[in-house]
Amino acid sequence: EIVLTQSPGTLSLSPGERATLSCRASQSVSSNYLAWYQQKPGQAPRLLIYGASSRATGIPDSFSGSGSGTDFTLTISRLEPEDFAVYYCQQYGSSPVTFGQGTKLEIK
Amino acid sequence: EVQLVQSGAEVKKPGESLKISCKGSGYSFTTYWIGWVRQMPGKGLEWMGIIYPGDSDTRYSPSFQGQVTISADKSISTAYLQWSSLKASDTAMYYCARRSRGYCSSTSCHLDYWGQGTLVTVSS
Image (cartoon, rainbow over all chains, first blue to last red; front, side):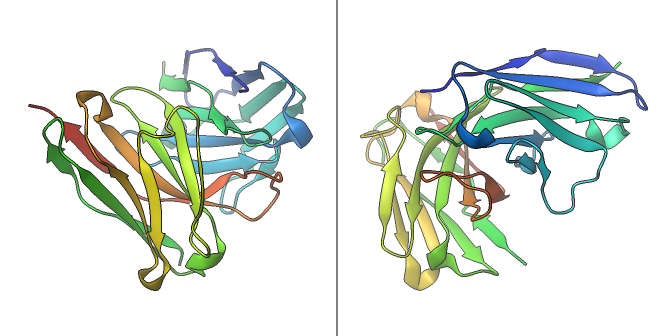
């Protein structure tokens, strides 16, 4: 199975700053079948990005995804207070589907 | 509006059985796969398996094969996750989620709508 490793484990930033989250796969993710989710405390995950770079419905353009093969990035261009949460990547190009371990984005 | 509404929190003893549910509405329930995801306390997301309610085709993650059973009743737009004999290590939040039909691989896809989660606590 494909192992996804997210880094950093925790990212401490201030509102207004730019956040860059990484997701590295143990083998190539076919056709960039990679998604990103946001999870806030006590809530279900929410889809942000699919196909590595396509924003889901209703997701602001401050969120962007990029990458291919084994290296993927989620960028939040300018952090809002509500963006502080845990972010997970998921690959769905190979079975079984796998998730990264998550990156916690916290307020500095 | 697409909604997945899960059954309420459960407290069970080791060895007991359990079936939790996920009711879909606002879309054609029989034409979208429904997946289940486990989140143990303070941990990340784990893929358990998925079912196509239209014909009950079911696929399990190797880690959960034989440990749980996924089923669906399309007449009431509801998917289920069940255990025959719970263990303390089954204590977790369980989410159902709809598999999208957008940019998808031949075997899976991203998850576009999620239920609110069902907390299962197993303790003697």
